[in-house]
Length: 244
Ligand code: PGA
Image (cartoon, rainbow, N blue to C red; front, side):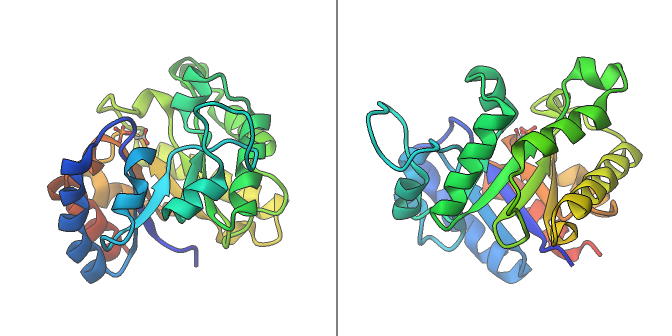
């Protein structure tokens, strides 16, 4: 069985005062008994690590070190206390022109540092409307998931771009169809591909989490806005723990 995991992505939000939200989440994460990860901005990683919730990063450079002003390597993020790094979030793909090849290289950097990559894929609204979702997903999987991926080093997050921060979500049948497709593609491409955890992301909140977690092949969620406050994210963690 793929491992269940609830991941919060704070994006470019949070300063020291917000560490209290991680402290407040810790008892819920511990009693739920399900893996819980917060990816704060890199500026908070070292202070967030050790507060009782696993901590991840939102991006990394593909290299180990060198003349790359403003960038952080996976090794540096591991040193700061990260256990996971998100690669290929659609905001990175859009705002920083990251390609599938960039994301594959960053994912290999995450593994090189001994961490787990959370590789994000998902179609745009235009691609969704044109019925191209599965083709887009297949191409992103082929291009951004390196051979060598398995449950020990990789999580895949399906995030339709049009659902991120919009309050819109696909229907549960649409989520089921895409997740079954991703599961089948990974199982075909990788020796242990069927065991890789698959997260859904895009406007997950306490009020829709239980219904999304009941979908076959959904092993957790990647949550943006609703991960910023423990009062919002805690119930999502609990819903994942109780989902069958
Ligand atoms: P959202 O973001 O939960 O705010 O829609 C999800 C994400 O971008 O990971």
